Amino acid sequence: MAKTGDAAAASPGSRAESGGDMTRRSFLSTLAVAWIAFTGIVLGSVAGLVRFLFPNVLFEPPQTFRAGFVNEYTVGEVSTRWKEQFGVWIIRDEESVYALSTVCTHLGCTPNWLEADGKFKCPCHGSGFRITGINFEGPAPRPLERYSISLGDDGQIMVDKTRKYQWEKGEWNDPSSFLAV
Image 1 (cartoon, one colour):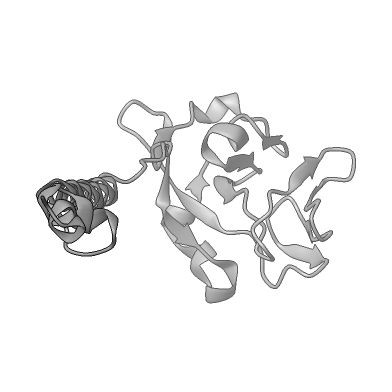
Image 2: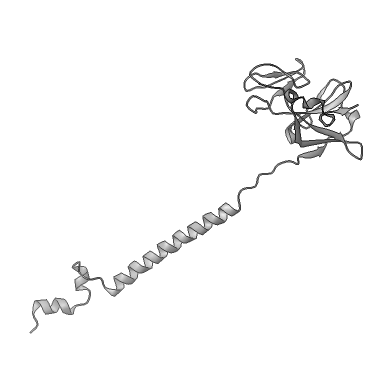
């Protein structure tokens, strides 16, 4: 006859159930869970690295563009044709044509051209700019910036937004900041 202690020792898994040694089956299950977790962490890290290497690309319009011919612009008027697409106003006066930036020098909002008032007015904080781009009211610390402007080989106006000219630095006298008509 077998003793009760011998019967408990004879049945497999009885020690594991009572909190004793780990069986081969429970060891392999724990090992499999650990490998799955490790693989998940590694794959997540690799996915994060790949995402980092291929960032979002935002579309930006070209920095140089053709703005048409000089005779398309009326003397004393502001052309808002390029405001949405390129962020530029083209202005023609009696002597020249110049391209103004549509970015307010206060906090970067986009002013509106008010034809009736003959000025640019920033809707964010009330800065006002004359048709020349000179600031005269509101918190804007300096005038609007001009972009480089020239005539292309085909006679069209070429605006280059990579070159900016600031009035307070005396750069508006630079021949590239306006197009003599």
